[in-house]
Length: 86
Image (cartoon, rainbow, N blue to C red):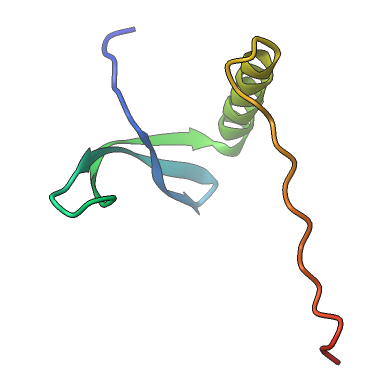
């Protein structure tokens, strides 16, 4: 491995001609409380198969962190259904 990039997250994900691209970003606090400046760091490009392998590896890591107690998995809330709508 030739270099290391730190990122706080992903800002955009697009797919053009079968190539998935996502922008890695860092976040830094601004003078306005609770607001952050989002700055691009790098763009990652991969095939759809490569993205799926990445998703699989990330899922395995999250599950391992849940097992270790580092993370706590929560169930998504059920959608609210408006029974008065027709």
